[in-house]
Length: 225
Picture 1 (tube, helix red, strand yellow):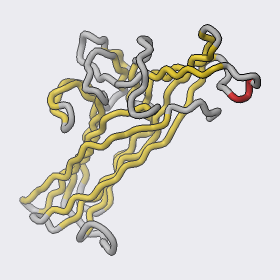
Picture 2 (picture 1 turned 180 degrees about the vertical axis):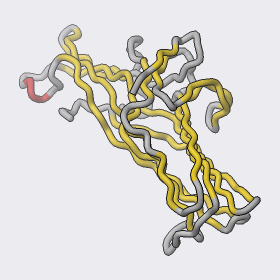
Picture 3 (picture 1 turned 120 degrees about the vertical axis):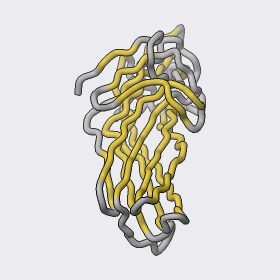
Picture 4 (picture 1 turned 180 degrees about the horizontal axis):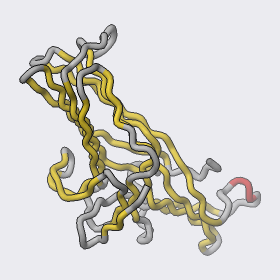
């Protein structure tokens, strides 16, 4: 996966929280994170269903993948400071299933074609940080559900007739660069990003869209993994 660098002054995507946690150094080293840098990963998964009265279809959409980030633990006065930074999307996947309704007992129901889009942007709608994106992802200023017009990384794909569709994105196609300012974490010790999940389904010359903004948050952990 090749990356291109977008500077803060150019079109870029921002991520939001930089984590700084302070822990008093205990007597036993095993009770606090080892000093130095470590790369950690946490999975995410969010789903929703939109029922289209026009198409008489449930559009079930799922975002899943992994957020990878870095942790740095170092001595700070008599304490240990832990900082979390540089989140990366790993294998961000969109899955859409079209059904005869939403909820329990739903059965697969075909449509003629679909368009799947996932769009990622800063939790606080900030635009002052940089991002690396790999082809075929794009980055630019566009409309978003939570932040209005802002910088976002996105990917759109099109599919033919069926009832189950998956947009795979192998590797690590989107990586934010933030964390040097040392601001505290919001969301209670979690790294969060905004994701807009959209799917357009077509039957004949009719179409309808399902779209929703999803909060994607993972724990900023001291863990070994």
